[in-house]
Length: 263
Image (tube, rainbow, N blue to C red; front, side, top):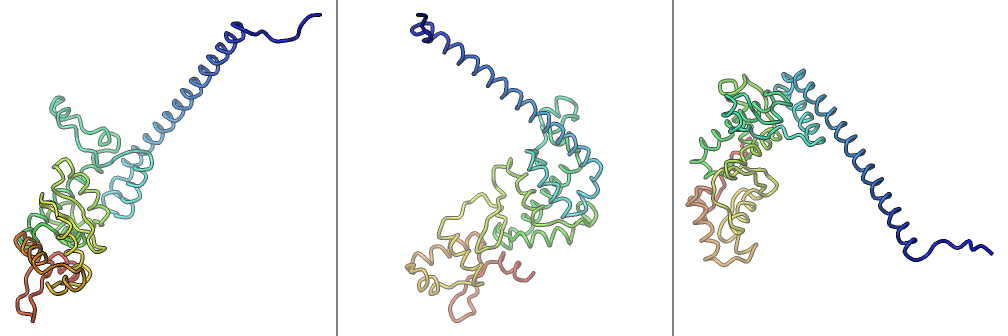
């Protein structure tokens, strides 16, 4: 009687290997097909974004809300409107080659943030003797908006979001300009020196309370007097805090917080 049993031994292993190879090839074809489809969709989105930026360049530059939404659209499909220009490529081609995103989005978007970044640097340098290189972003916003008619773009409004994006475009400078949160407030630090934990703690307390004294730090944080005085001396030397010696106990104020509170 004929047997209905399937083949065993080497032939069975051979058939299994063939089937496995076929499944692998089919899987690879599906992955390639899906990748091509996604690439085509992304290309369509990027082309539409390019046309959108050219059509609405004026609105992007003049309307802060519109500009923020445009930036979110860019981020959603992996487009970085702040990518720096390809300096070497531009030099090699007579200055015609910019960044990939500059070509795709048009120069207007990039120009806005680069011009704003230049103004942020100017404000930080102008006020460094007052605040030691730590300035509230709200103060930067106020100064830029107030002086923008003469300096950049004819009275255009800027938002804190714009300033944060402009700071990101300054990263190639080696991280000299950084945003930092202290006591719930956002600041720009424009000095290369890093704050140690004690200094950050003191500035955060000042941001919340307005000022600090040696006894306040001792009573609330349990710091020794020598530790507290050493931290204050370092902050005063860097002009990050101001001293009010007329009070009953010497008080230490942050000029950055004073400007922010003064609105």
